Length: 366
Image (cartoon, rainbow, N blue to C red; front, top):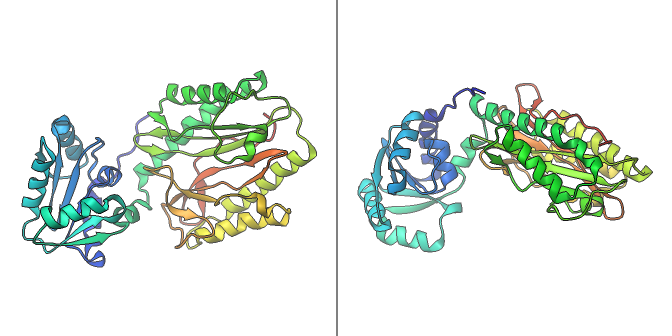
């Protein structure tokens, strides 16, 4: 599938526009996810110094050709320095930063030891400034190319589940079913899985982040399936819960309540609505059913280059949703004696509401 291009070249100017508010004149970007977002580089080692009128990318010899190719493809004009040692890379960054008064560091991604070294050795003449979330704030709003990649990852996950779902009736173990689901996503074009696939059956379903075990999926089990695919660096995320065989009265009610909560939450997602408000909508439905204490986690999270990123959808979430935000809505009820139910969609916020990117039907019976 041909995916539309992403507008990577526009991100550096927008990042520079945030410098004044952060109290810096330049920014040393050391988080590889941030570097991928603003420069297109996908390797495992590198630093990007964003200056007022240019940028220096420093990496090692393994990425000499890749860094040049990927930054050029992204439309990013960066001076590239190859340093065979950390000292050589440090010297290149120090030389490029000479004359800059205030140099920002990504506070969430620099250790105390690194900060001390940078303040004393790397940028001895400059003031080193801690910055928080400059690139993460830009990443909240996805462009058309980013949404297309998440949607393609979601399509692969939908198709993979459809292909292996009948196996639930053949008494596989959780591990066996998880491996088959993972392989199906890779076979359909995913570069990888988004995270370790959750297959939680019977009493294990009451553990929201249960890891697949040798337990055999049995008749009468609720089975929670939480999984996603990775396409060109972008994740998808979806949860469906099925009952193998006939559910008990309590299991059916659990599923109905969670389905109602999830539907109400998706309907609440729109511009100008807070993530906290969406969480309250979902939580209210479950509380009215008498299971407030059985909803053990937040309602959702942002999805993109990370499987969990801003904006958040929880009781502690701050800020409002806006067009281009991609978030999950995933309420759940967990009762150890009956199992667990979670239903999750990934949606993109639009001008007047939201559009689901995950499309697998929500059905109780496997």
